[in-house]
Image 1 (cartoon, rainbow, N blue to C red):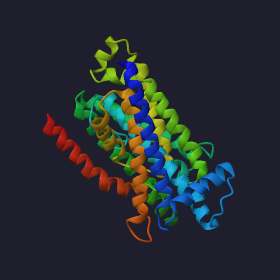
Image 2 (cartoon, rainbow, N blue to C red; image 1 turned 45 degrees about the vertical axis):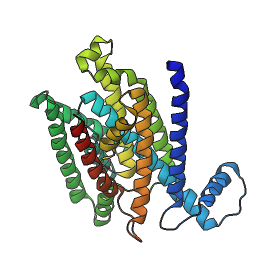
Image 3 (cartoon, helix red, strand yellow; image 1 turned 90 degrees about the horizontal axis):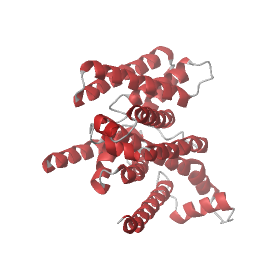
Image 4 (tube, one colour; image 1 turned 135 degrees about the vertical axis):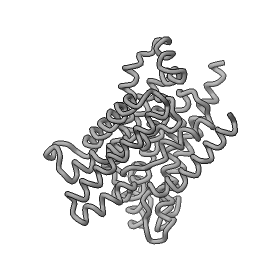
Length: 341
């Protein structure tokens, strides 16, 4: 049975990879200025393989220096947030768990803003490290609040909402107190999700983190399957519960922090994409995790494209687009789940 499934899985993986490449291709071609699809392929060939295709220097510059790096980071962000949502929902056994709801994104934003504006760390701490510290602090605080409130499924969500509001308030306080008008405007736009300033050095950070996060999560796929039956059942199956918790929470915090430091806080991706992917491929994490990463990457590329073309002459914050489409999608998924019960 296992051998018969291998060709099907390889075919599905190849199809998913092709869809991701097509999404990246569309993301690089569509925008304020339309670029021919063949020009995108020729630009990549020229830059990577010195193919020597004759191209308009302006079109080539737009594709390579602006759009292609942007869509790659968008794909990494979507994959990382989707993976984080899958892991948190499985670990906590709560369908509403995701980095945004649990305050991890808000904590990462506070950490990044504190480094950028207050200069915490004396220049020795970069935005990703500051965001990582803020994400971990936020999750620890939310966990303590949840333990004090009780063990119920709603406790962690209520604690996450409280933590989110606290860290959003701290971020607003820091911006209001210490930032000048230009910094405040830039920070507020960034907090809504902003890919406009992304360039190739950011790809060098986002891509390894997304790949590493996927590898670490896949390494714990069997443990995540066991957590579906609760921590006690997982422990009875030989799963080192505490070690798995530490590894996976640190992984989700790392992925969330790096993506927040690059593009700001983006909601609904880690909440909606895991549910949508489970409806397509099931609940086995060996398949669910890579599928969620691919679906999240494609979703974020699509959201980035829409952010560039919805309003003529203006780029919307990508967090606005994900919320506009994510909220109705989540309501639809929840209504279907309720109808199936």
